[in-house]
Length: 199
Image 1: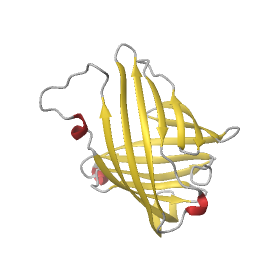
Image 2: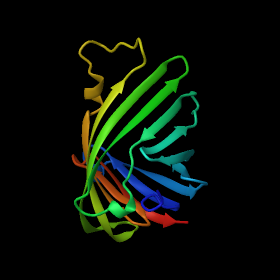
Image 3: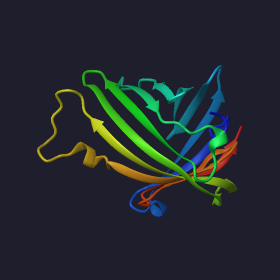
Image 4: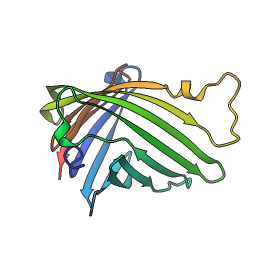
């Protein structure tokens, strides 16, 4: 886990919109602290709010239970995985799947499932505000499906999965011992770049 999700603090700038380069921007800070066993405490701070999450690395991926927020919603995540560090070479590909379940008081559960096909395309230099790195570029395509709580009815002609995008393609650049330094969506609507590395 710690090879491409290493301990320490990392700050990212995220841009979203039709063209991410000139869109709304926000800052996210992630602090990762190893715990006993294959667990890691990850504190994510965004817009002044910090959310602590304990991730557990398993043979099938990473699992976490996100604390209930102000509305009492409980989120359980069964995420995909990054391969063993020894497999990180250009040409290697893998499939992973993720499940997210959201339970809100008085509403019930909403489920989101996704399958992702990823491939390490090549090693290349990438420059971000935090510096210039020799990174491995991972191209991924994710297919997503969502289901609403039982009994929920949508207006005629409204397709929930079509509204959520259905399928997305991204490229991400990873550096051993640093983690992810950049990610972009294929359509240019989202980007995230590393701006600072701390302890």
